[in-house]
Image 1 (tube, helix red, strand yellow):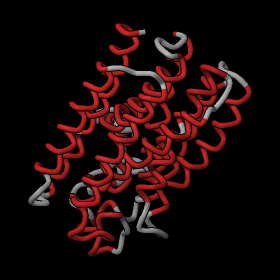
Image 2 (cartoon, rainbow, N blue to C red):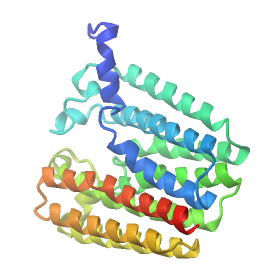
Image 3 (cartoon, rainbow, N blue to C red):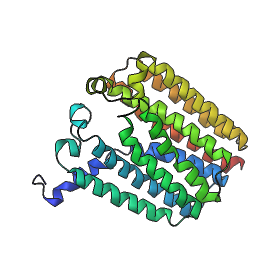
Length: 291
């Protein structure tokens, strides 16, 4: 469209889908893996595990493309996003939508290898993933929509592994949703000045100076809910040890972001990768050692 030879567009597609920045893949992956291990009461079926790991990469990449399409007229006004492919003109809106469609189609092909319940749930997941990029235009709680979109992999994981979605799955879904609101509020704090200037809504804009208090409360609630879920599932001290590490990391994030400096807020956001990993390692170790 703008004179870019087809071969030179590959880096732009990588940037569009954030494959060069896999933090989003990990933040989507950890709750999905928690769900698979809880659903299987240990190591899940390897085919299901492979489907959800690859599906996580595909759906997150597709979501980024849709997000950039939705924000193509906004990103150029935000310091952090002004060089994104659509904002800079490196890719067109049509190319972004085509990439998203291909990635979602590939993800749906993977879902077809599961069961009817999982396939039905995937349609709700698609709606949530499609709605999220536009939520910041109508609500101060786009982070809640993102949490629902990210968290919906949890009931799908239970459905794929057990052909059922028990109350435990929905409790874990709610927990993952709250965790997403917490860490994405930290992320939104980095863009708050730009968002206020251009009229974009977020929890960070709504909360103002109460932001860290709310994030801290949410993180503590997430750890408490994970503890209750673990107790219900009969988990032991190794899982509890993982939660202690996760709590320490959550407190560290609040300390990192205490001055609300954008770079420090982003660092606190990124640290949630280690928090999710700590919970997962504790869960895997607990099932492996204690059964």
